[in-house]
Amino acid sequence: MSNNQNQKINIAIVGATGRMGKMLLEAIANQSTDFNLVVAVDIPKNPHIGEKIPGTDVVISDNLETAFQNNKVHCLIDFTRPQGTLQNLQICQKYGVAMVIGTTGFDDSGKAAIAETAKKIPIVFAPNMAVGVNLVFKLLDTAAKILNSGYDVEIVEAHHRLKVDSPSGTALRMGEVVANALNRSLKDCAIYGREGVLGERKDETIAFSTIRGGDIVGDHTVMFCGIGERVEITHKASSRMPYANGALKAAKFLQSKQNGLFDMQNVLGLQ
Image (cartoon, rainbow, N blue to C red):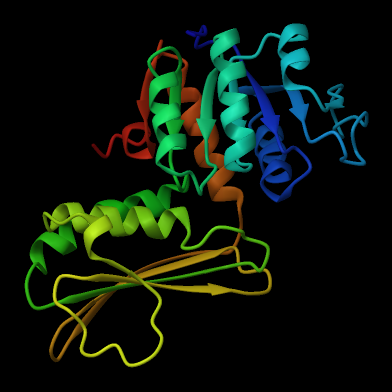
């Protein structure tokens, strides 16, 4: 898994023609002294299969395993869907390729599969790769420990109309950070949306609200609502480039690892 730190890191991208895929390709081009695109893959029905990535000799493929057989890959970056990511996970294990997973929406069995595979290969698995968001996770931990009594927690997130999972993985991670800081289990205290006559808000709950519309890249706000004051911690993304740059930081981090499951807090030295 290790790669000479003086050599470029060979990167494979799945979902290469999607929104995040295109941003990752741009980020690699911007950091060409450190990274080299060697594989670009998308689903078989994609009309761009067989085309070259502009500015490279890399042809978009529809078969990740074949691409791995024909190229030396150090790290795969995957921001696709859970089903596809879990298939790619097994291919990475087979060929000893590190993996950066930005896909969200996994169920417990999917998360368990990632953790098990991380015993064999190094993986960074994080709901959000942006440096700013991971700083917010740290701030939330501090805020929750200080505002640990008399404050209701509300998490509001907004994304584009094409996002399929809800709440976002980032919002859920924010809820987990707050719940852990308050010695609660998010599974036991989470509320997802409200409708009807529900009565007064129960103490110790953490509530989520979701907005889907237009081309919103990603907005997240955590509110600690007390009597007479409210503390809000917000992150707003106007571009996907922070996610792409964070994924490349994660890929570089993994080059010194043989195996293990990490997140962006590890990558950024925040843990």
